[in-house]
Image (cartoon, rainbow, N blue to C red; front, side):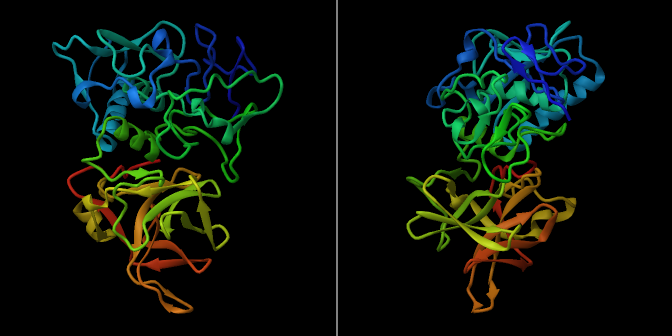
Length: 387
């Protein structure tokens, strides 16, 4: 599907409803370009983003949204409540709040990045899909655009002299975890913007209603210091509380997917299964993350985690996702049997579509172990639904 992209002050290709009142453009699912307005456009550094007090964002909804809009806003709010410790609360007497406001023209934008005194607007018109509501709500909560990260040149590049720039690099974008191509905060990859990492087929939320990705939720929970409520992946330079497994749980990119594996030695390498070629893949340096705060979690069978509700509990830890948005959970093979005999416990990836097996690696090979255990967070958030 053709994607419209901002180039200087015009679009390379036009689609109905593509151009906003101020010349910004949107992609086919309503992902706005240049959608943080006024002085707060420059945002705040990760270490000093002005977060909302007590993790509560008071809001009100303007009178001009129709019933479908209201339903989508409710879905967006529930997505936050399921995956983060942030609460969106209907405003009563709060003086600091945001308003969902419907404009007469344009796409969508936010007046603030993070907390702001007084009343701020999230403005919507031609772009009123679930993903767009979630995208602007992320700006209000404190997240910038993913492709604005200061390390973005390692992950995406611009194609063609007529494509214009990607915008300035800064420390104001999500920069707490692995680069997240499938973030709801990432522009779509198109004729101008392209991923550098092998195996990544597209960028951004390429389908409507995908919601906060696993890494989006983790960035928000880190920003709001929710570590008391969930299990956090962190870069491995100085892990304060790595998992108690003999080899720590880690995750990294494998052919465009973010999968789960095990770190070795003193956390200097992460070994991951590659189901595409059946081989084990090793990573070093800062290309992977280590699971911390393992004391807040325990292992349980998938049937226990599903319970009577018929679906996997949101307290189950999602370690990543495939390049096609399928959620990947942190899984354990209690006793891996190989050609060399039993090698004991191995951590790996449980795919949402195949909860009856965990994909692990050992000895440069990939194994599928039946009847896996999954990691379950006690009294907290597993960040487990959707990516």
